[in-house]
Image (tube, rainbow, N blue to C red; front, side, top):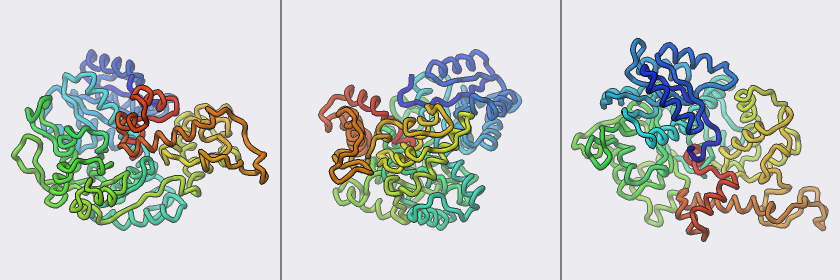
Length: 484
């Protein structure tokens, strides 16, 4: 079972070999993903269309063989990306070539696997696909809201700082100017990067993203620039990197602060010259990709401490967007919560009347160490557990429904208490410490780049204890990569 996957997307497997299709579907079922196997392109499109109205919901992930009779895999990929834009597609072939891989990525595939594929490769591809599905869903919602409800000149969010951000989005979208975003994990940096791409002349070209912090340093260069067969142990075939996959479109590099000095130098070169060499190759490749970068740590501080190259910082700090944490955007919490509840209403096939006043008050008091992503997860949990049509405070998780979240360690009275502090909510000491412990662990994880070994050492506990605490406190180890 894959860790960190509370919400399992449905998987559609498309392969003209029934044995292969059925075995792959069985693998996904074993991993906890509802899966359906089909054996042709027309059957696949029918299944995708039927799923849109199915109580089980649409397919979030598609694994498609590129060599299909009749309607080929690449043609099918084009149809899926056109009509099912929130679906993440992984292409699979027994006859992999660099040309077919590049074409598949240009048409919108998020990954390309060569048969025979091993279980670990499928698991890694699934994690990427889940992340891309979440990103596509968020980008689609933003695009629908901007283009449908407000028009291209509209603004998402009522907070003045968010209004300013989307003024900057509109101003920079038409250019190829490098954009640097800063902000805590989960504030929506990937969402803003997607908005810049969608508002740009490149919107019909590939949008490719990579969380640098989620890739081991030894593999990051290959992920960015690709490699040739035999470049290193395990390089059994040529691989297309993210820069080439984003040619003509937009490349979003999140957690750029985690890049090593050597990788920073390579990034500086490709940003200046728009040229690179795949790992193990002497061939220089020119690329036209608009680059957007993000950091969850202040790069100015890293430059001052010598951990980030000053010349790279000046090169990428052309247009800077600072995304405020959700706790500083209290006025947006109601709008976001209602939007997430509408989304859950559609997914669950249930009608919700909204939030009880005390539930909304609790949501507005909470500090959101996980920012917008955490709010989305809170609303999803509440919608699933709610017994009635109105979300009540009892439907919210304990850390949100506590009497007062504004100061987790304080003994200040709750709202409405008299001067003597007589009004408060009785609870056990263990329950009272849930919120502070969760926030402290989250801050430690973020400070260590979500490296669980370093975090456990800093906290003075072993990795097993840290994993148990993260699980009991509802901290998803993959959320920081999905949220951006």
